Image (cartoon, rainbow, N blue to C red; front, side, top):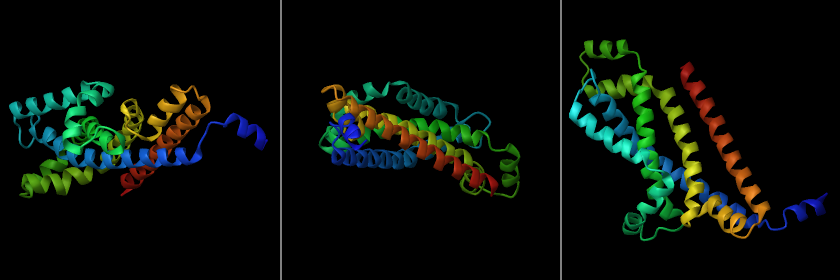
Amino acid sequence: MDALMEGLLSNVDWTEIGLASWDTLVMVGLSLLFSVLIGLPIGVLLFLFGKRQLLEQPIAYAVLSFVVNVLRSVPFIILLIVMIPFTVMLIGTSLGVAGAIPPLVAGGAPFFARLVETSLREVDRGIIEATQAMGANVRQIVFGALLPEALPGLIAGITVTAITLVSYAAMSGVIGGGGLGDLAIRFGYQRFQTDVMVITVALLVIFVQVLQMVGDRLVLYFSRK
């Protein structure tokens, strides 16, 4: 049995697989962090500037919404290539883990911002009105009512964004972004090493399943509170 497995996985370098897996986790973790830090305030502003909301501003909403829609509509593979000059200027390289993070954030932040806006729109209007009646200002309403009430939806949005970033991180291997995607392209595709391709795909599937399971449990936990 061992001999059969060694034959089927003869091209697999488990050290390389381990390093590539770690690189993927770092890319997804850092890009998710920055996507949430940037996307959350943008999503809150989209909600506040919306029609019949606390800070209704049609022009500001239209401009912000347009920028978010533009970034969301650009296919990520194109965004990777278009952002190479900016990434080099910002990071010093467009290769490896560091070079993949700026385009990952550019793709993830607007995606998460829309999810934040949607989650806030689902908060019961009565909660906002009750908080206003108590004399709360906009900041107090956002941090004291809106975000706590929308927390399960926000966690679900973070989960969806993280899973999206896993696929984006794999795609960044096309331009030498590192991680499992880079390994799959260099060995699985260019050198026709099918066993390497199968292992990388299996690991990506496992990552997604774990993220979804953790996200579902967190949503369930905070929904009960």
